[in-house]
Image 1: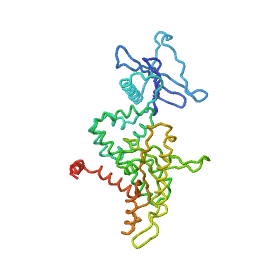
Image 2: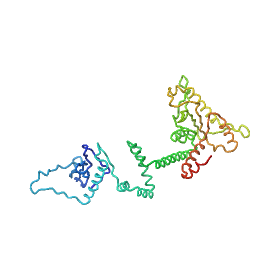
Image 3: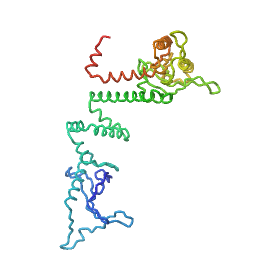
Image 4: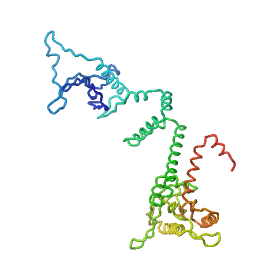
Length: 388
């Protein structure tokens, strides 16, 4: 007797389908199998399975071949067939046929060729448990539940038609969906924050370009209005007739409500913010910070000059009404004393048209957002009711 992990079903008509053989007995050279067939029985819908017992032998190529059978009509008087089935074989047959009856009751006759994975007994029992028992089991085995959910979600996104599966989530109701959305959002924010903490000393600009592209919700916190990325490493004009000197901004973004563009220039967390001391209590800006500031302003200028050619007349892509400019650079932790902090703040507070934000400030906003989202509902309500 053997069990297979998969069950193959192939329809032979709208009302019948062939199923995988159920192997009841095997020796080195012979097999006894039951060959089932699903049917739509018009007289009794419950009688959905019929089949045939068949002996098989190994052929010359080591393949199983059906033994030629003798019809009942060829039997002489007082002759007959006798087929003995052992108790464990009969129990196995009963179990397999029960599965086919259940499948037919749930799906009817599957059209075309289908493959089903047989579940083990524990999983089958879990799938039929009442909700309260499932919750009790998973609460006692949280790691099992987490692993199972991870596998189910992976299967969902890799399946041919995830829309049908995702629709099941909507049946949970708006409150449950809200909780799930918040949970997914918090975990995404935590993953981005973890990336920052592990890589805050990285001077690889391409790494930060990729990280902020994948965690766009972190980048969006720079702005006070809803925003989305149009393109990373976007060309904003400036080439000569010799096709040289083009301007490539790290992120071209757009206000989702007004469609106005925004430009983001990246340096790295390791980029110096200040240079040498100029006078008592005053520090020069670093060459990288002043250069990045002038560069993003130049991008703003070239984008406005080349707007029509860049958009090809498609005004619905974005608008260019003196686009907002942002430079993300360095770490505020470099500002180790009051004079350094003063010099940096005086510069970025007075420069028109450009917002300068450091990496640690950006991710500190992410951490504060996580803390707010994780506050108990009652606390959030109390905070939101404050008049200021």
